[in-house]
View 1 (tube, rainbow, N blue to C red):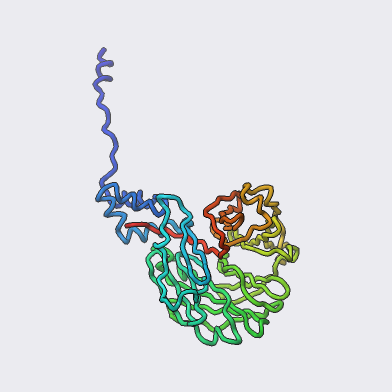
View 2 (tube, one colour):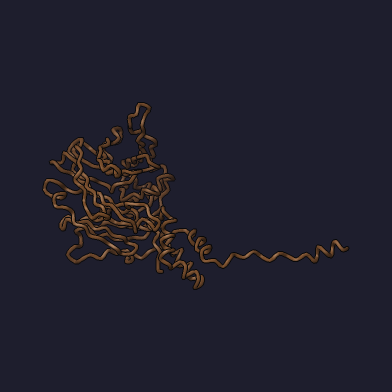
Length: 377
């Protein structure tokens, strides 16, 4: 009986409560998913949460923690006019006007869109011979004059890339940046590169390499693999690849997969770790190639997989597989944007699952944009 009374009289331990500590709460909030609506919705909980998530220092830590930001939308390149289109559903959908580039009236249609990377957008204006580096999240932009000897009658700029120049704790878009422009020279017998550094405000000397055949232009935006940028160049004997080593600032030429279909009308790039992959996309099939180094130290292209798209894609694309056109490629998540049946689809290359994102009768290049953008606060 006494034992029973003691058991009944045993007091229950009080519930454990989290300490009233802003640092601890900040650490919890930092783990919210990097979607545009995450922090705005958290700010509505109470005044304390709003104070924490609207602090600029917290924003820097939030961007630094999510170093692989999600794909939030794309920029469509309509004859020199970049238009933003969100690929997210509410409440994360971002209005088109939020990422609108304000240009002078006499500049409309003069800008060539060279791509997005690390929260920045790169455009080139040949008429004014200048580049524009734009941060859509906050509207910051910088115009930089291109040395006249880089783009002239003897040398023509065809493409470029922007990237963060350093790894900082406050996110890529606030870091110094570099711009690499590439083009052709010497009556199309040479390919060249030139680098701009925002820290010094200077351009490097022109760096060139002999082309394997007459090269006329560079097609898709460059991709970053490890410490090198890659572009596909096209000419009178097909395609080749220009590699630019960022550490040593040296260009090199890599042959295109010789066994790929020479009549393929669209190609894209794939990356996995520090390996270079290529996908050729033509005639209703998708071929995956990987560049491997054999035991003798010689690099060669190896065909990994071939997919007949009519057998794996959803019906909306399958019925029009012969008329599929590639519009853009999101490198980090291996998503290709394609046009078919008067619609734009997101095609996940790992699973070959496609999602219709909008209807369109216009075929225009697409530049995927990834960011930890915070909406409305």
